[in-house]
Image (cartoon, rainbow, N blue to C red; front, side, top):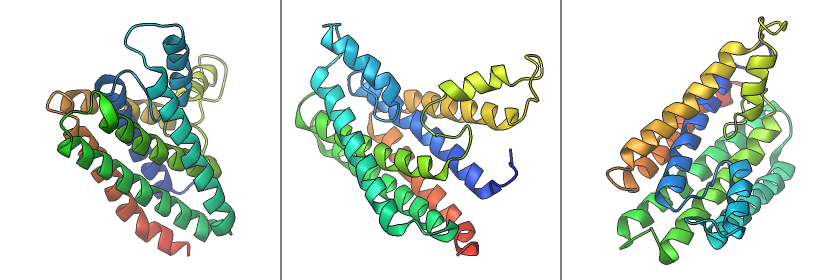
Length: 227
């Protein structure tokens, strides 16, 4: 899975964050009324369904997710302008993004635990907003890292590359292991999220927050080595 020029700790970290995306979107789509907070491509399509009046889709919930995702991405972009000066600070920026994600997802889990319901009302929109903001911060940060095939939230180009660049298709097959691992990580997160959701929204959200925090702590030594 290691790639020339991309440290293994960074690759493993991004794989783990891909798993978190599966957890988060399982919670949102299945538990918060067919809305995504990590996968904005899907969210735009969902918005189209909602505008057309399809049952089970909400214009306001989807727009809330899109808006707070953009706000999160904007904030991360501004933070990058202040912090991004070489690899050492790039690693620090990733740590800040993961810490932010862990805090916001943990707060969403807390609200889900305390609210009477998150299926409707203010709690639903607050949880969506918190998760979307966190995913916006992470997406903007990962975009700055520009690691091929590891956006952590969407797999369309990863799957396209897996097929189009394969040896069977006449390509070199470079990066196939990484692409397959990314797909497996997202799938694992989605399965885990759907299973934990059978208990309530709290376990998958708590698991996502804990994994994001664990990954940040585990990545800290690697970030310090390049400081």
